[in-house]
Length: 302
Image 1: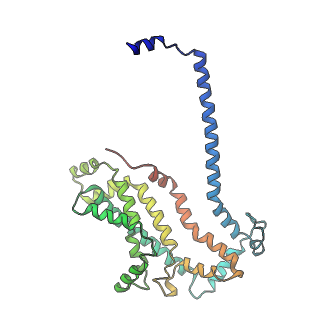
Image 2 (image 1 turned 180 degrees about the vertical axis):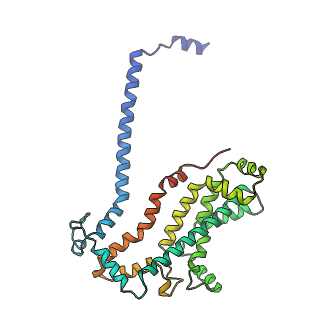
């Protein structure tokens, strides 16, 4: 009864007042959107500044590189730093193309193997229950906390015992077992409904067909993101700890040797910085939408 009396005594809001309230809301949202976009614009400027400064430094002549206070943009842009870099690389007894081949081979094979092994392991852990499965995944999670410097000595002892020192496999095989790929793929595959797998089994599909034709296409954003991480890690790997022969060294190692050549090579060092970060940035830009989808979505739900 008390609720009915309150409702009967409640006075309706005048129509003009309702219109005023409706008119005020868009103004508030526009002001909020303005400050939000202003904040995002400022954050974007902070994030893109190192990239802009690196490219600008690579285009500066040598006298502008030592200017104080330093200028953000090149006053007299030139490509001399890049041309001098290629001239210096050409004087090496190992050709520039050989360094590129070494890096490309290690990156492509290591990334492909990491993708296949991590995806298969994640599929089994995400969609099948077996003894020790949860314990194994917990070990993978713990492995994510270890820095590469901590595992450097055990890795060297194992690789040396296998006879892989001074070979490409010293870098490629450990990349297959990187825990980040298995963790990422497993978390994303858990979002796929088990009904898809069961329906494919009823239709007569085996495990390989289910994996390649149903599971992998549905987790495309996840494995594209994993490719980004793997390429970035292998492309920037100097491999100096395991590879000693000059004809097997990577491009990053050769470029860093030039970068440490002293003041006269400061411009070449700036060009080296741009070349080293060019490939990971290019791959990220080409697959940006898929990476954002990985971060924002957890897959389909039953």
